[in-house]
Length: 279
Image 1 (cartoon, rainbow, N blue to C red):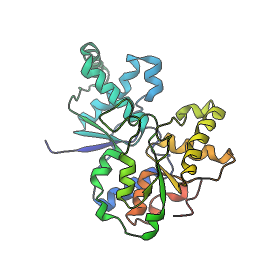
Image 2 (cartoon, one colour):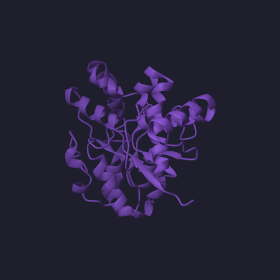
Image 3 (cartoon, rainbow, N blue to C red):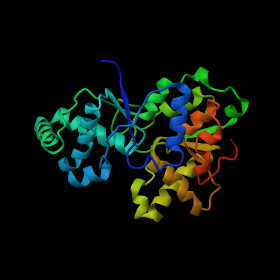
Image 4 (cartoon, rainbow, N blue to C red):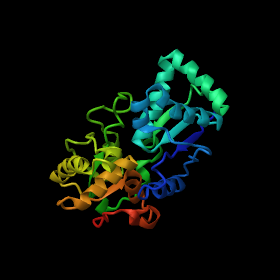
C-alpha cells in the first residue's frame, strides 16, 4: 500500500501563533503532501483519559478509525497532548483485547467506523526531520550564530522510549544543528510547562515557566524552539508578567522555515507576543 500521510490538527493548532502558517510554508517549499483529516474531533488529551479512564480513550480511538476510513497509513500530529493520547489509545487496544472489542463495537454502532490496526502515529517533528534535507537550508552566517534552546515538553518522549531518550531527548537539537543553528544544552528540556493548568493555576504555571526560561537564558539562548501549541503559549505568554529579559519562543517549523530562507511573512512571526528581533 502506498504511503498516505494525514495530518490531525487537534484543538489548539489552528489558533497557535504561526504554527499552521509555517507548516503550510514548509510543505509548499519542500513539496510535502500532508492534507488535514477531512473529519476530526477532539482527542480528549490527557485530561479526558486521566479522569474517565477507558471511556476517556474513546475520542482518540475514534480519530484513529476515522483516519483509517480516509485512507491514511500514517497519522501525524503537531501537539504533544494529541500525540500522547492517540498512542495511548492505540497501545491499549493492542494490549487489551476486551477494550479493543468494546471499542470496535461502539465505533460500529455509534459512528459506523472500523478499527485501523496498522495505522502509524507520528509526531510532526519525526516526519519533518526525515523530510527536510540539511542541504536545502540557506547558508547564511547569521543563522549559525543563533543559539537555539530546543524544548520538548514532558509528553513527547515519555513514556515512549521508542521515540527518543525519555529524559534527555536529542531529536530537535540535532534537527536545529543540521539546519545550521547552534543548539544549547540546558537541564529542563523535558520539564512540564503546566499545559492547560495555566488557565486555573496561573501563578503556579508561571513558576514552572520561569525555571525553564531562566535555564535557557543561563546558557545564552537567543530563542526557544518548541513542538507543541500549549508549550509555546505557556512559555511565551507567562513571560509577559515575569521580570525577566524576554526570550522569543518559536515553533520549530518557524525556525526551520527561517533556515530554508522562507520569508518571515509566510511563517507567522508577526503573531508572536515576543518579537524575535535577533533573527
